[in-house]
Image: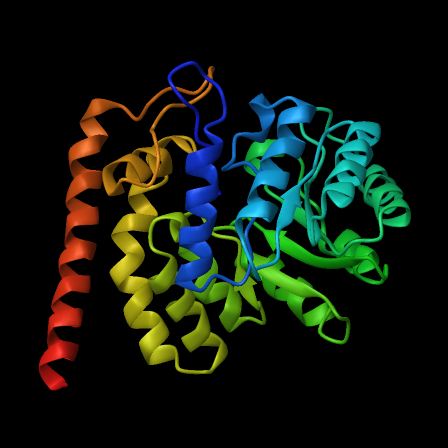
Length: 295
């Protein structure tokens, strides 16, 4: 989820709650506030907890997985404990960034939180942001921990993702895509879903694509993947969540305002994004009209 800000740079809790309800109504299987897309790096610890609480209060039946990662193990533990106290159903922990721990440090980091907080936890690997890859051996070792329930894969390395899915197939462990353009390929090698940026804009299509793939209907899944392909590309022309917040504004779901040092999407990209969103809306309208005609 995105974190909306008002003109005074404060969290817009009303818009946040409305957005959570929109996504729940669209059929998503879970909500992930205060992750990278939620600009967690610019939120205070108190704001982290307030966002998690607001999302939990807004929805009826959908699990809320709170982003609680940090490059400081004590800070990740504190955020995780506070999210658990707030009522979160699970945790998403980005691997420590900037200080680039060795694999043994990653094991110690994740085990510290997993030993202390009794909630399902998802290990998040995004080397482009953290500067360190979580190696398959490390993931497989973490998967044996009772509390570590999944892996969000955003390395872009499908071979590595497939190896992790293969080697954890006998564990109660979910391998999830963290890259919209690789969601379908990830499922094809044993993944079970996605934590998606594009689903902020197209939740119904994203759910339909994942559902079709998990059902083995790859023809339908591939068709939806191709429909969404232009959106996947436009959402990453600049650093996430800059483009998706612009898309939220265009669709009327929330403001495009970013907290510094991120800035609004450059003007030269906005027209292309508007065109892609218009095409998706046109396709939706045509499908609805065709369905109505058949009735």
